Length: 467
Image (tube, rainbow, N blue to C red; front, side):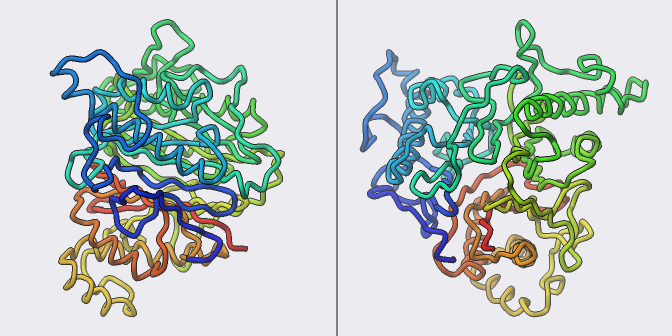
């Protein structure tokens, strides 16, 4: 890894994935790994009494509620406290966080986490996306993993630090988080869900009847089609339209969006989602990642969307990478990667051959890496994941070179997997392509890692611009 990316390791804090730091810093940003709640002996934390730090305020409990709620409470507290410690080492605090993800194993206990977040983040919480996953740790004992991106106060290059965006187009949050923040020339949003908080009881957007005429362009007038596709079409339109209005009131627009992460409840909704997506992004090609999570939002929501944009008065140079050595984006009106100032956002990377077919045999890989593929498979015993990951990292290297950077510039990877046993394949492949200190890492088990059939692993990447 290049000398411009530096790892951060918290003292007396074990790593769930050995060799991967708790955070990395580069270009004025801090990229925070998925903080899996571990005790000092490496076991999963289950009670506040095991915290080797300040403890959350005591709450009334019984034997039954304590057994169920205390792991959630203590693990949430540990996560925010660990991120706080990372930022304290940079002379910052939680007010420098630009976005967090809360990957939760069971969202029924979300209110317990919410109480902790209120205490830790106070009146100025960062934007966040809270999504349900199958698992957040290989042993299944962690209820929550928290990661994020923050300012590195020691090396921040822009005049303005984090500011919470408040304008007439911001609809209120459904819980304790900010809808969006600006930081220098960037805007970071929370995950937006199709709940209309401008109306009493915060109604769910359920179908075409809940959006105005301009949001019904996919309506065909037949009950079967509109019943099947109406909910995801209307929800996607509502969310994008809400974000559009917010951006336009914040010296930005959808044309300034550089990265979009979409969480679907059901990957079968992808085609309809994408039809709506392209209607909003006809003039630009932001990076796009779409995955299926175990639980998205609440109250019947089928989609959650977060994005990063530029403020159009921020002066950033933008470069959409749309074709590289026979690689093209997996979706229309998207890029392989979008470089915006010091950051490069990559679309979701999957192990397919460029035509939507997942690679499954060593002979489908580039000839130069086939001997290595055979050797790695003999070592780790994970043929399918190894082949897909080798294709992923080959493509990643090509895209970064086209953006004027290299694999040394990778600052953060979110690894989506369907089987935690495949982490051994990821590590062996990552160790080959990034042999030095590793990027920040989150590893999450979800139902579907990509719209591409047959995908068992995928990665979402943020890199830094080496130009």
